[in-house]
Length: 240
Image 1 (cartoon, rainbow, N blue to C red):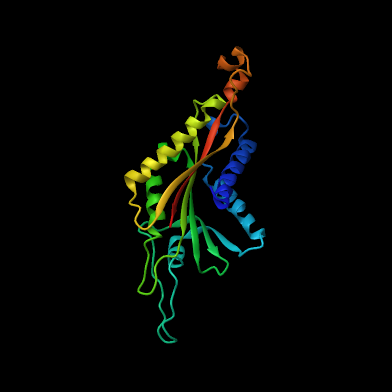
Image 2 (image 1 turned 90 degrees about the vertical axis):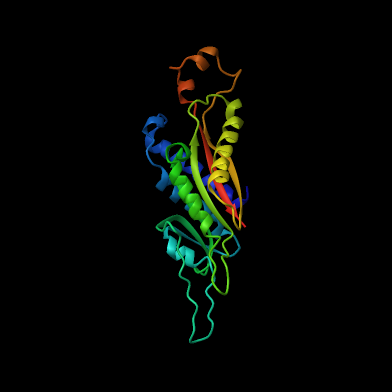
């Protein structure tokens, strides 16, 4: 993962921490929709790049797909009397969770869609729709130019409720990665871009085999066992 992608993971990680503060540790059955909280935290996390001595970025939350799509392709002024204006939009128009632009506000850099808890299990159709929209940004072109967007992202949480031990983490990470990769392979035609999936643990309170007593580990009513949880952050990346 590059620094930008790590900042998305940090936004997801901050969201879990915030949600625990809001709901308490026993939040599994109270989990509602952390999408908005995650969107804000990811936007805040990537905003740290504006403190670096480099070109600044503009971050927009709930951005119009039409506005973003038109900024994926440079507008060319043919002459003072004949201006070339873009008229692009995605097939499924609406709002992008996070849009990132260059400092001029006219050049699209990337789009970030944020989904809820376990969307590949509970809302797979919406995941596919967001992936298709993220793919479409790469295909825009006019007579004079083509899309200059370099990346689009889909980010979400994957919870593994049966995981209790640290030595199960890698299996969960592999499972989350393979799950989204299979959806992309089956549903998306990667025309004009490549794809990859990145995963990382964003919260866990898991047990270590050999560190805890059998009573602590195998008693379902024990605090340690009951509070053992594992959340994985998943990022689906389309890129040129």
